[in-house]
Figure 1 (cartoon, rainbow, N blue to C red):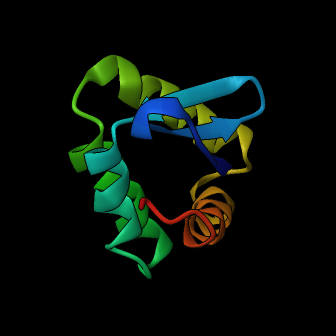
Figure 2 (figure 1 turned 90 degrees about the vertical axis):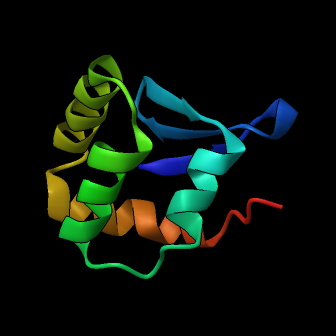
Length: 86
């Protein structure tokens, strides 16, 4: 799972062909919370950052595609560390 900076101050979580776009404030909620254990990071994104069930379904599919929660959240956390929101 990787983070991509997009135009207009937006960010995307990307896994294969799937992507979830985040507003800057949503991305900051993740960025400034790190470091977190993988379970807490998953809950933060799934329960707090993503505000609608369709987004959560896509996120969980991305996590499964990336090898499960432990490996996906470890990979995502490393990617987030390299992309500052400013």
